[in-house]
Image 1 (cartoon, each protein chain N blue to C red):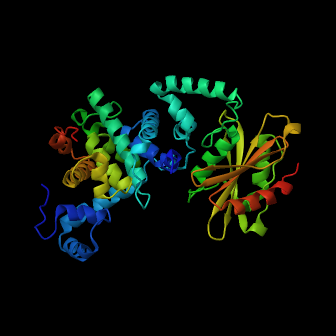
Image 2 (image 1 turned 90 degrees about the vertical axis):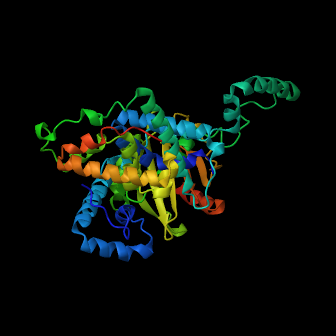
Image 3 (image 1 turned 60 degrees about the vertical axis):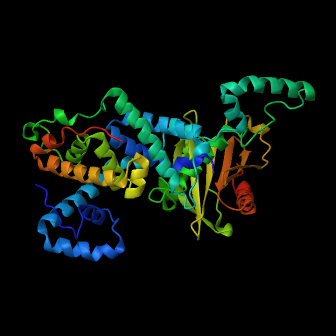
Length: 265
Length: 173
């Protein structure tokens, strides 16, 4: 039989005591009650142990990389994609496209019309996802920390099949936190280096091996933004770099400019 | 703020779904359905000033999807029903560590009780937030919490009479 606490302390208050949801002005009364009612104290102790044990279940899931299918489900779609996905819109869209096409004599090739972040290379999209996932991570932002920098760079170079470098941003006030290995959209190996400044602001440098002809790389910086995350990206040799952060654009540009000469093959 | 702001919530949604369904594949399918529904309904979501609303909204989307599943199948497949509960003294696994005992006890709760316990203990939602996610009054949350905690305690203590007392529990909104 469940002991029935008298009206001065409610059953709900015992739960609230365990869950830390008791109003501050009731803490003393409930604590005193528990001191004088061993049966209730025993139940509360059991609930506390239960709560603690429950919090330990499946903890590992929190540290697993997010499966690609799930990360993709929340990839922002361009207005165009969202609009054209609606069946009713497709007819109108086709008509509009024709009209625009005739009107402008197809001056705008579809790939040139980039709307709302559409049209950035795949590696930049991967970099943004990685940035958004790992930057808020408190316990395990990186797999290998900066103390083992030589090992980290060597390991990631081996996995990407290309010699990598972790640029130094000391002059800009950022230090290396560490790095991790990530899967690309088609399962390729990707590297992520994370940096932090004294205020705890984080930037990530995402490195991808590209199939494009290195001779074609112009080395110019391009800029993209996605919510409050800004990214500078460029291609150097056979590697695609994306530097992302929630920093003012000029501050991020400064970091990108500092990285570029250090990453010369 | 776009749908990509749901990304940091995915690990917690996955853990919650896994504990709720007791099956890793089914859990990820549930998360996937939740995120897809969130994409479709994104324009309906009202951000709160402190940014805390998104997680609760995702949990309530997941709750509704899960409820449909439980309704469609009459019960949740991965878990045994309370009625099928057997004497733990005869269980060959009774010597396994506490962690598994707790997971098995959790699996034997009615879905409604399991949800409340997980949202409050694991996800550390407030009672009000939990009520909001589940679409029930706070009083219902409290009575389900109380019942689920006592059930877990009895199940883990091996008190055979516990399930008999609660076998009539049904999924109610």
